[in-house]
Image (cartoon, rainbow, N blue to C red):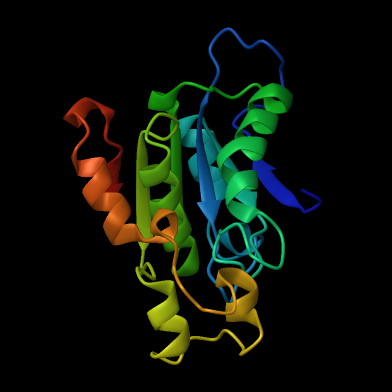
Length: 186
């Protein structure tokens, strides 16, 4: 996908084939923010240095981290392409127990969806003020999506697919053995 990302590493430069690759957290922004907000409004760089964890801030625009019907495939990018790229280029761990995702608002929805749909990749997810039902939020609760954006994301019928429904995903994931479920923090 042709988009931008910001990355903060706990070491001075990327090192391929690191002996001890660091943990990684993907931080997803909300619908009214962008990928720079986590670095502009927090002291997150100090956290990286103190804890030896890499942070990845992908640009999600206003697509609810979903493979859009009429637009980019954000979910595929975040669940497959980006983690593979980050591990290869920046020497971070690809192990499940070292990989986490977190997000704010729309990003909280994306974080929960990524972890629940990919429990083999993400050990945990944290959501801050997550939008748990993006269609209801967008159409009935005064969410900021325009009349053109919602159909572009979910189609003309404005129907949430099961794989985008956090409640269905939570029920499905609950059937896994406890050790295989991602830890959820909200």
